[in-house]
Image (cartoon, rainbow, N blue to C red; front, side, top):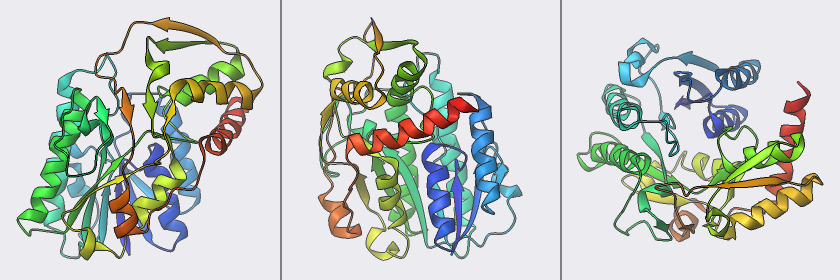
Length: 314
């Protein structure tokens, strides 16, 4: 299979590219190498992918750069590229451009692809809103620009299935962590603070938040299992995540214990738009994809700690 991955230099996109490449698929990636976080991290990831024979083109979906990607012979497109998170410094225009307009441009490109079996949109539990504890048929109630624009992107993709223009589905991911996690994310910051003796900034009240923390390897299991199941997945929204909930405080305690270092934590004000609880209901994923996450939070955090220790040596 020939597979196009958008956002291939990013956290989950790069892991998915590696897995599919190892399975013998012809993987092509694109990434705009945006400066939302240090571009050197994505550049390092690109080198790893290139060593495995995975070609990643620099292209901006919102600018229609996909027309420069050779050929229209992709069997699958997996769409990770997006403006992530709920950072205070990111304005609505950035979310609109990188999540909505970019996805619209991608669907236009996909419609011209004569071989396409499925456009797989990567969505988020943030579309559910403050309390993301629902099955896929629950009405979305997003409260952040991120969640709102990711929901819009999801609908742009699923529209293609409804109109029978192409096969399409959307996967809603829950609290993914692991090696290559973005530097602004919880566990990357926690582990870095423990290993370097720096201060960790904790948003007020967030230690009580409940999360379905899901190891990236388990998420990639779910994403890649769509391959070959386009008939049963077409038109579907599917949750992917670990059913086990943990408080953020439990995650903090795990990092402290696994690193063996104390954590210097300072609290700041509450973060607007933050989810209070996420719990992945994955009965549909289990039924359609035989999806069963296996990695415990402690196991996954040990993998991430080992990766960050190696990163600090460089």
